Amino acid sequence: MSGGLPFRRHLRMTPLHAEVAMESRTNDWIERNGFTMAGHLDTPETEVFARYHRATLADISSRRRYRIAGREAMDCLNRMVTSDISKLEEGHFSPVFFCEENGLLVGEGSLARIGDTEFRLFTEEEVLSWLRRNSTGFQVHAEDVSAEGAGLELAGPLAEAVLDEAGFEPLRLLLAGHAQTRELMGMPVLVLRHVGDVFEFWPEEDDAVPLWRHLMQAGREAGLQAIGEKTRDLVRIDRGAPRMGTDYLGALSAVSHDHVRTPFEMPGEINVDFDKPVFNGRAALRRMAVKSAGHRIVALTVDDARDLTFAVVCKGERQVGVCTSFAFMPETGQYLALATVEAAACSAGDLTVEAEIRRELAVWREKLPVRIRPRPENR
Image (cartoon, rainbow, N blue to C red; front, side, top):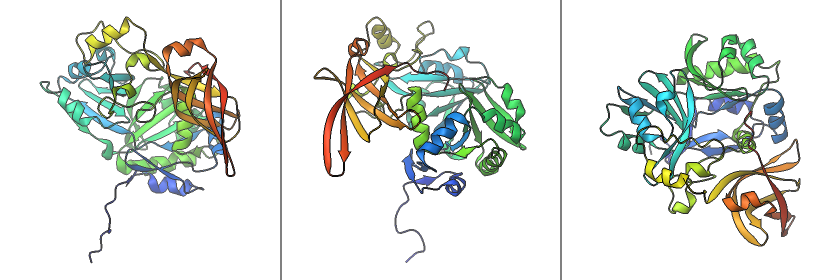
């Protein structure tokens, strides 16, 4: 018998797996994009408090990254995405949607302009084959570089204080929307700054562990705490940010188009520029723009601290939507959720969710009032 494993390993470990495991007090692990990721490293209450009142560090290496480079990279990307990439300056990044010919979302993500002819696309979905298929005829090359490095997220109101202690004071000058490669500890690291004191670091694989250890050591006095994906999901839900594969499906993976969204049904800014030349789905999206969207992805709040699960959104006795993500916020004693709801019902109010409540062996259902809440932009 050979000395190899008697099974094929389907999940991979990130370059930071061992460091994250050392911070874990729970041994709670989940799967994300084919990687083993921490769920919670400590209690949910402790992690949430650190994220909103101090500073946190997280492994985000499971996020997919694509390099799109070549003389015609900008023209190629302008054909793929709904916004005007020619306005994206070098050293900046912006959210993007990319659609198929019927205007249905293939995916979304963040697109960073690294150089004059080089871009990085960060997404939750595997879209390499779609990128290559849609780059035919352009002098451009698209490749998956997810395995070439690692990702760290430093976030929270004391994130800048951690940067100061780490000797990275110049990063304070980065404004939200900037994406620049900086020398940190003698290592080249791509740094992205988001709204709400959120910094992403994308070092090369061998540099990830030294950077993680340095930040953890520097941030001890500021109360820096490592957190897992479940707390990051709660923050995402609190921000009203849907996740593909959870809150909606992409056009390439959905069996039914009823589960695929368009840019006009997504929360936040509608990032579609009809003033630029032809792009994927332009004609279909222009037709959609003159009529109201059928559904909306909205953020909900349920005032109840009991142990609940809920999925159905109702208007009276009629089902008008489905909850796709929900999480309990320990600090407020509320449930936060994302849901796809009929657009007409969103403006009418008086919505309820059908909740399932379990106590020992008993199970019963209640309809609880729910509020649609505005999407905060500063978190």
